[in-house]
Image (cartoon, rainbow, N blue to C red; front, side, top):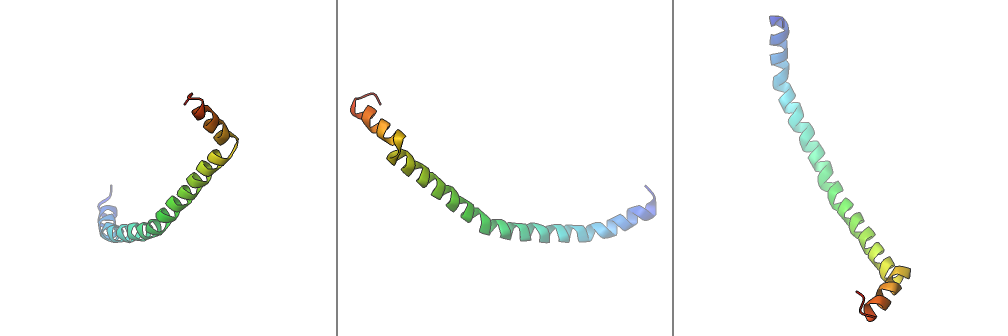
Length: 71
């Protein structure tokens, strides 16, 4: 590698660390907002699915089989 290119890269890399740190901080801030919303959606879907199974066709079958002692 030519020395002139190496010296240019060394000067630029100092700034690259700062830019990288800024990008990571920005992405972390975005994720801090998105992750709780994502877990909220997952919880809503899980609650809906459980309620559907309890009230739906499968829920009735589970109640009948549990009364018969099969579960």
